[in-house]
Image 1 (spheres, helix red, strand yellow):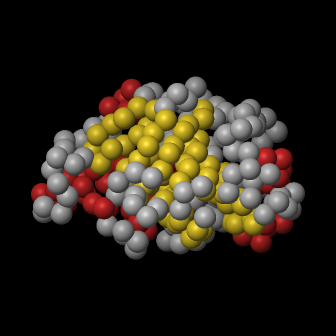
Image 2 (cartoon, helix red, strand yellow):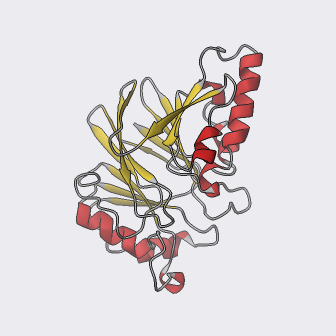
Length: 249
């Protein structure tokens, strides 16, 4: 599997930036994990949108879905131009709740909606996918994703607070993509469904992940500071997300 960071910023993109989105490629499939603001303009550097095989959405907060409507409109035009078959809508896998959001994922012949939860097991080509509900605060579900292909495993943690039970789901994985929303100086005293960079490093070390990608970062954070506050992680390579970063497993 190859992971390309298309966007990683939150709550909004900085100049020339993008909020969360990750291209996952194997020998046979191309998946997009989340589709935040600015993600499509980055995706076009690697693959045309009409060649995607599936989109997986962790939850419906705007920083993770802002480009979905544009993607749907673009796919409709590709079908009109006969660059994608009209009987081949892009499948979007996402939570069923809130209903008003999930209903919007069915758009003409361009996209289809497929609900997921913790009991969902997907096989998309050579990729096996499972889901874990995270501690993300406001009652609406948010799901982490575990992708396995050709003996390699990555977990995309989506948004998560300290109450998520990662044992077994993210233990000993080849790559853990995990949020580091806060630095030490701006971490809230009360948990609000997010982790700090220091929390993330400690978590990945406890889970013995073989590599860590810290993401969901405010666009003004300095990468050097993020690395410093991730010092607890020593089990493997620690990456600080940047647009265009590629990691091959």
